[in-house]
Length: 552
Image (cartoon, rainbow, N blue to C red):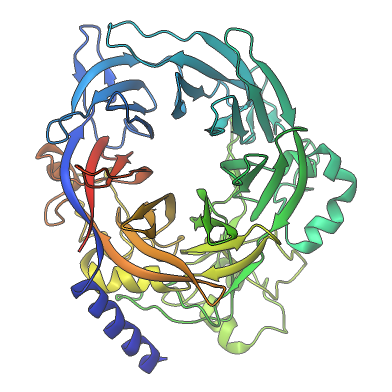
């Protein structure tokens, strides 16, 4: 294992010195998270000022939505992006996209268990007035929207997370659904695809690895198999006839027929073998310690993008990881996660488990701090342990929905080689004394770097995949291609803006924070006169950043 890590370190070091496609910063704009009664911008760290973005190439405008405000930014002068429109929002805006003459924004409801809304706008005309031309009710907690290429259809993923009823203390788990809207403002039509047809076949899917963590947990809460499905992110096939929707908490991808508005299939993603693929599992071992363990990881992707290479269509997925929880009005919340040491202390480990694994689960410097599922493979005693998130990106071939590639431990290896003093850090902006370096290793026991955002583009004929990591706020670039009919991915470069030697609050005040939590990435192709560009929204930092993408 030591020899393998040495070889990998040498390879990564060589790539870092002789990298090919890289990011070069152009500018960063810090955005207010809201505006006061005098229309003055109010700034703050960790206020989710920049959650998602959309780019209008013709007008050189970027639309940015956050929890409390919407901004439109002129980026014609990329060195000096300028806010030309802003407005507070009555509810949290979750996504924004542009296509043709339309801009679409999704918002959750005041009570997340009730239906949210999709708002349709015309493109901003710089008049100072910008109002929706249509308001369409969709499902509970709309999380992401996606236009078809011809701008005639919008698909919305409605996550349907459980929460408190607006009318009582009861907990409601709404159906996770996919809304399919045929655009014709102000009289667009909507159809809904749901998962109810899978309820009478649930055992087949549970046995195949589709997760339904709330199923059977609460006798007084309705949580069917279909209610457990939580749509997250969307990608289309080349023909724009199929939507592939990540079901993050369910460790699966749904295949949705857009024409018939029907969920055709749910594809489980399987589990990552950490006997082969190493991870740093503890925040209490005093060092970076990426090693193998006899446990399994759940991929649980957030973002997904579709990529066509040669004659094959692929889905690239960012394996962030996420767990279900229920917050009650009174008492402690319910979580599906339990630390390894709790299994050990509560005598929940099967006698069939090796002494080595059992002792590691009881040791906080090994697996004792790592979060595992207490609902998967549930029996009186546990013999298999499932951790959250793949700490990687994977690639699935759409022809058979089989995984053909996973980056293994390479992301943590890259982070160790590139930014060892902030490896697996947690951006703890609640502690006024915390610095990026003081938070080193604090996320190793909890999903590690959490790759969450993706974008894809071509740079000098190369297919480049951009992957944003939530915790360390780095962006990793890979060259993806086929060789002898087999999918391949080569690490190109990694970039993290911002300094690390001051407190998070000092870095924010001095505007040297970087892109804290790069939640959304948008690739802009180059022209004869301009370089390709990557636009990044930093949710925690409340930033919009522009980067050149250079092939060196």
